[in-house]
Image (tube, rainbow, N blue to C red; front, side, top):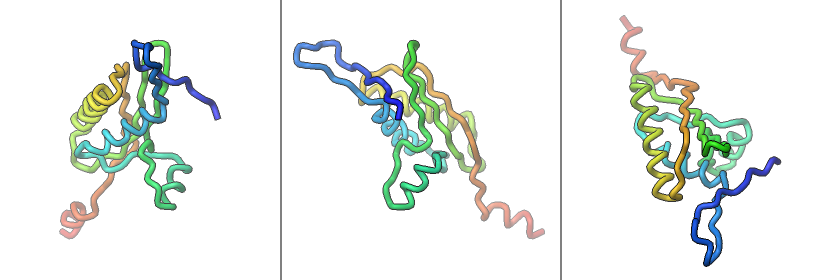
Length: 132
C-alpha cells in the first residue's frame, strides 16, 4: 500500500503540529457530496462494494484525493438522477465540497473534478410514455 504524506495544517508549532491524512479529506468530501440534491450515488470500486455488503458504509467511495506540488486535487465519480441539470449539480458538488473542507480543515483545494459516470433512470417516468 502506497502511503501518501500527511498534510500540515497548523502554522503555529509552539504547541505541536496538526496533520491531516488524505483519507480524512476523502471522507469529508464524500459526506459533503451526499448532501447535494440530484446525486444518486458515488461510484466505488469492487472493494468498497464488498465492504458495503457487510453493512459498513464507505463514505470515501467515489472520491480520489491526490496531493501534488500545485495543491490538492479531488476527483469525484458520481451517478446522477435522470432529469437533473448536470452542470448545475456538478457546480453544487464542487462548491459544497470546497466550502465544507474549508470550514473543517482550513485547507484550500486546487481542483475538484466531477466525473459523471452514469445516470440513474427511474422506471416510473418511462412506463407512461411506452404504454401508448
